[in-house]
Length: 148
Image (tube, rainbow, N blue to C red; front, side):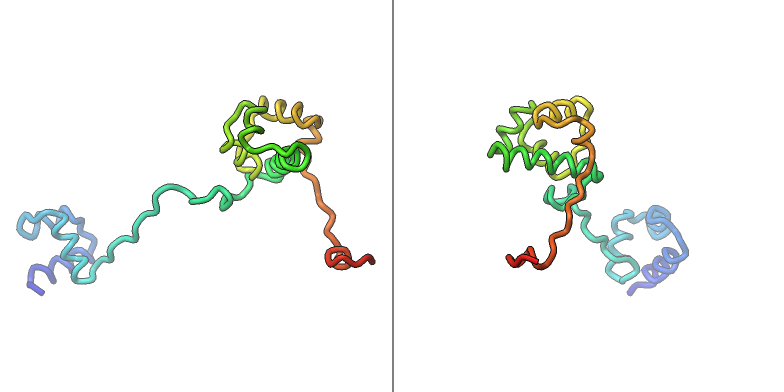
């Protein structure tokens, strides 16, 4: 290690900026100073910043229990009652299939207009649609096929 490098590291540890170090040590470029500090272990290379958000929608948490309840009702209507695909359901609500997916997962923040449209389509009063349902836990006897 050259003498100027050890002095530079000491100054860096005292809080001098890259620009100040570059001027003090022979009008070097701040990038040169940063590389030298990294080579000698005074700083670590920053971890790569992940680009974008979560990779999958299913990794996101529902916005609230109400959002989740609306999503469950939409999914129930679409899959169990009417056997519709997401695109077909989207056509009924005038939205695209990606938004239907977000609605079903409870990660879409509904507008009042959307809530009214969903309520009319599902044939549920708005207050019933906005009320989270609690599912009774199944007993162990019922889950493995035996009656209690």
